[in-house]
Image (cartoon, rainbow, N blue to C red):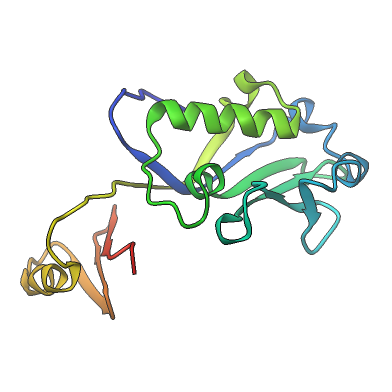
Length: 178
């Protein structure tokens, strides 16, 4: 899952990883989650739980943990913003490679899955980003970006956001502070 990570600042933000290797997650039964109610809250069915980050109310955030250990197919899926879960919902910190590894180690501890096994999960969706701090108000900047046109992308506008979409990528610009 880590691929070729470098020591530069990147932000592995919102994403989904999963595994079908039930030997890794067979212990994640309903009883496992119920015995750890301080951190896990059932979310819709006995196979789906919220793993809260134990922060103050304004920074609380969760990852969704799905562990289908009964029946077929066996599947474990983790979905959400690892950055927000690790730093807090209101944080504007970037998730560096070192922080990414620390967050995964913390997650592996909560799930009682060895870190090396967590690295073997498949990435099925990922948002990689970068916070750019600028010294001018964001609104005029977004207006300038909206004026740029190119046939290789489709511009979608929402108030305060700019979305650029190609067949392979989606780029979103917005004011994170507002």
